Image (cartoon, rainbow, N blue to C red; front, side):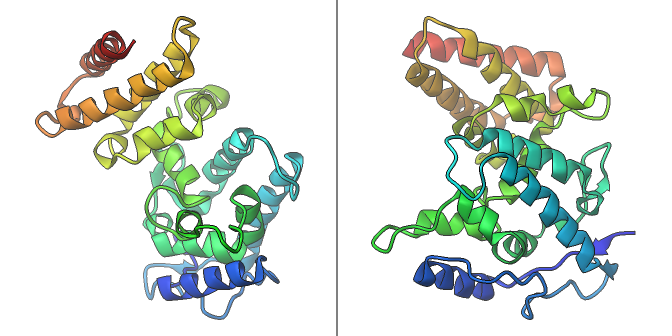
Length: 265
């Protein structure tokens, strides 16, 4: 059975975000927020207890990483959230084959998750901006859509970088553990790249394999992978990556990275 997941409209999300900024706080939590809505047909509304169980699991995880106090790095926390999402069956048609259901692809659902169900965890990860600070960059962390929402972007990592059921669990998600925020964004923000899971996985493996190159500083490594991905994106406009075998694709990626190393390095 596919459960219908709660959503909030963009206008509601904007109103709540403005309140968070005005009060410098997310206020009192209410998962049964009256302005939530569900798709009219296609399944049964998910029981609220299932959503609260999800919140409880992620809150327990956050507490392991010093919630509600500031943390130096959130990569380990977000890796564990990815594990939780993978094991929460109501996001998937088929967990083993990482096939998301239509409900989990709705941006308004991720607005609900971030702004209504878990705003305290979201603002721990991305603190509310100061009164005179810019709020635009922060707002995209709260609203569903795009590639930067606090929780939706972790879900998208699963879609792009989960190596599949044929791997044991620790290796299945090893790429999600091996990349940092900038590396994730370099791939995921280019939908022509991230929409091809095979390409995303091979790119991630290439980036991780080159982290051990001691003759390059981090700035050079960053320029290499960013420019390589830009070139591969352009290549994908004239040649479908889906038509290339894994061996051909791996060779193409390696050659592009080596070329950029020579140009930049």
